[in-house]
Image (cartoon, rainbow over all chains, first blue to last red; front, side, top):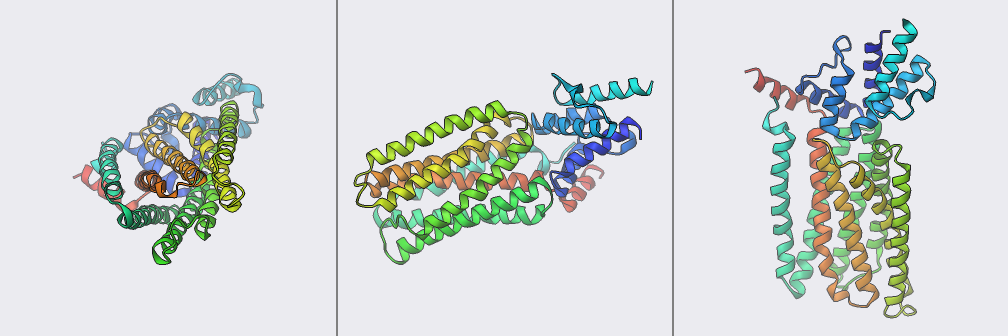
Length: 102
Length: 274
């Protein structure tokens, strides 16, 4: 599974924990902001920017949960994220995974 | 582009005006009336505002379903508002039906007090998810609230007109002060931590303020009961009304923006692609 698809999958899993109707509603708000929720076109940075506009600091919490899920699936140890918050943790995981692949 | 029906800024402006009108219109009869008229309006306006909040909570809980954070949290909030509505109706029955002036404590208090547990559960669930990792802030607010609750409890005992005469009244008043702490902690945390965001700022702000108003009214009522001045208890009714109206506004917002509505989405899509 490529990283973009993994980020999409983990994002779906996290926002589903809010409840199915709320997940669908968030996806609708995202589409209204021009954010694609299709795995092939999913851009986590654009998603986070749109989510921050909608949910403020709540967006960082969601990104941290996404990062936690991604780290588990990529089997990256928990101390990768020291001093990082929200989307920074997800982007750090992308860097680490790219390095491992390269 | 969003249509006005789903534009948070448009709905926020509309909600602000509606809230202001509702707060004035629903509290004015209570302030202007006196004697029996005030008792009548006080009871029925509170019944109406709490019933409105409960009706919206029931709609939200049913539409939200059982799944996820909001599923369980909204069901708990609906239960809390149902118990508080039962408390309001019981109070009206005692006061207007049986003609008991200031029926405190009574079965109404059992219903009200029972409502605090699901209300606190609702607030804590929201905060635990969105306020994760804020342990120091949570500890500071908890300690400050515990100190405030302890101070209020001591003050109640000290000002109590006849502590040996009606111990049950004092015990129930102290119970209110204690359970208010359960609302104050998450309400302050949500207010401090989660005030931003086009979708989340408005409901979380209104929810926190409503819970704080509820706690303030409880403390005021308990204080008046303790000093033996029940004739002034009505002054806390506008705060309870304001709290219920704000809870209803929070639920309206959740229903509009956090629960997917296929028909509304289809209508929006059709308007945008006409």
